Length: 352
Image (tube, rainbow, N blue to C red; front, side):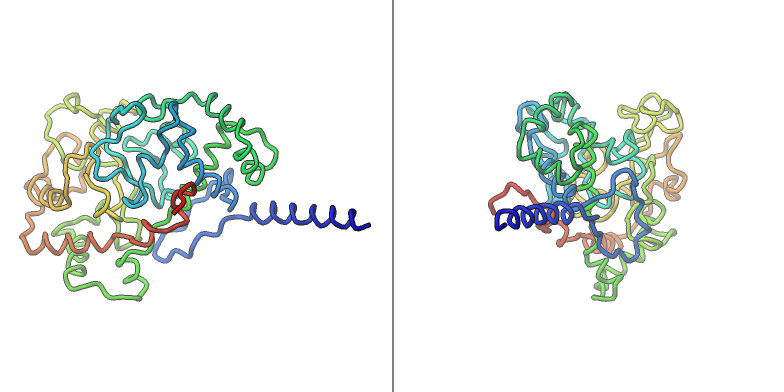
């Protein structure tokens, strides 16, 4: 009788553990954000998010077992690879573009500088098979994960008894990446009425949203919503060419083969911009001061420069030194120190 009771209790505890871990992940209340898009085919659960976190930090998905997603996406730099201009993948192969940070990804309809992935799940496939990054065939990745009793147990908790394949691996990592929410900068706290921006920070905010001055608002939303980007693609006047064919990196146009899209790149968020340099798709600017100088005095015309760059024809917004200082103060207020130190996003293998 005692043995029967023990077996029933054990079954109940296992069932409770599975059900509890499979609960849908609760995202924080996000004031001043648009409604979060939901992928109905991959609803994050606590078990799935935790599994994805382990996979994100595990070099098991690289050919030489030395490179993980986190190798090029470091939490203290808002999951960018700052201060590196280009990331080093397997065998120290250098990437061709600067590494984008990872946060608030659920709102992006397309990923990468050229938009080649249309979902987080699709995005996961690219670095694993890319010969410059992790260079591992997905069939081999599946084999490795299936050979791990640790991961087999975690996958059962997250996805039941379904076959562990590349689809489930990508879903798990995508679930973790969706939880990388940045919403606790000084700017956010000011929006919530918890603090006041300094005089310079507020003046910089005003400049950023003044279409007659810095006019950052055209591509980087900080008034209508708090994402810091419209999430689209733009030719932001980096280079001056008379013909489309002279762009070394054709960006979105290189993928679409549409001439009007050549030289267009993803518009990154201004959030955490102070910790994610260098800047632009090729990392050409090392500091925010250089970026501000560029938009003030270095814009170039080209056949498909973004029409929203209203100052392009005069070479920039022509900001004075005080305005540049104020704009920099505002950009620094967008740093989310809570996000870049949140232990829920940290390396689960770390002993610290």
